[in-house]
Image (cartoon, rainbow over the protein chains, first blue to last red):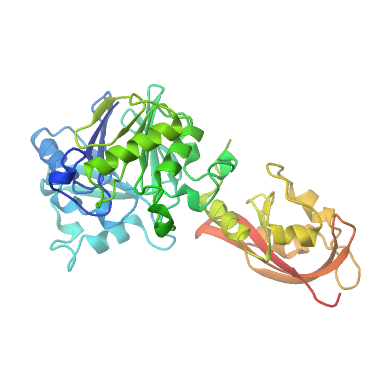
Amino acid sequence: MRVRVWGARGSIASPGPDTVRYGGNTSCVEVEGADGTIVILDAGTGIRPLGVRLRDEPRGPIHLMLTHLHVDHLEGLGIFAPIWSADTELHVWGPSSPVSSLEQRVSRYFSPPLFPVHLADVPATVTLHDAPEGSWEVGGLTVTSAPILHVGPTVGYRIEEGGRAMAYVTDHEPAIGADLETAAEEWISGHELAFGVDLLIHDSQYTDEEYPDHIGWGHSSVSHVATFAERAKVERLWLFHHDPMHTDADVDRMVRQVRDRWEVGEERCVGAAEGLEIEV
Amino acid sequence: MTQRSLLLIMARDFASRLATAVFLVDPDGTLVYFNEAAERVLGQPFVEGRSVPAREWSTAFSPEDEHGEPVPLAALPLGVALTERTASHGAIRIVGADGVSRSIEVTAFPLFAHAEECVGAVAIFWENAGH
């Protein structure tokens, strides 16, 4: 499968000269299976240019996997060009809440006064699915979702094809539920999703110095992500969900800190940047 | 190793920060955690990674009712929470692993992640003063 980053910023879009290398668009990652199946992970503002490409090169059903419904992961849905075409079949997967379906929850955002059009009125055929806790097939891809620790209902995804695997575990604060250094693996949020993957895309919003002022906000520090990656025995790590206040130079420093702590080199750990692409 | 339910992970983390005794089981009733406060009441430390089935923990502390009659699993508050999926409260006497007999109050309730998805149950208990 091919994995490409379209937006790696967290919280709010942050374009400008200080963020030009990693990019200012919020969360969006494209996964393309060998058979051409398209899975989109989150609908941050990064989905806008991806939508333009998919509008110009339509290729069957599109599957959008939402990790949760915070705005930086959903705000791009309204400007995702394929939903404005009646020829589009879009399947949206994501977490339900204990009392509301995904459709009810997404519709709250995708309606006035937050958005001018109701979700039910878009031309595309949009089907919303509560992401199951388990695996299902999407084309030739096997997708697994499981709840992870964040603020509110949130899931992570693992996508597998032909014996290779990637995991998308953004907006994740495993340290709130366990001591990552000492806890048994079964007690670490997200561990099973990420275990042994060829590529892990993981939250790394805070420096170790910033984290104490943000405990419980649902994000990881550089030490957390390094420890998590090591304990999950992942092959390669992309740091993701960059804080909007972090410049490219800040992210560079955080990447180096994770490499030092995990004791790996550039070939195994980089910061996710718009346009970054890999064949897993 | 199978990942624990996120709700159990959070419940364990919550329990680990409480000074009130907490006993946590999975949907099958297998003990997965008790906290330090519970260690004092039960008279033994929690052993990481040792899953204790319900039939074992429900008899290990010799629970008795106010008449000195043994209380079976199905009648223990945690047993009720597991089998009937409802909250339950009771007063029982137990003998800790340290050999000390203690009168305790127990409140137990099931943990539902969704309306139909029970991921375990929790018992909160405390020793009655003066016993």
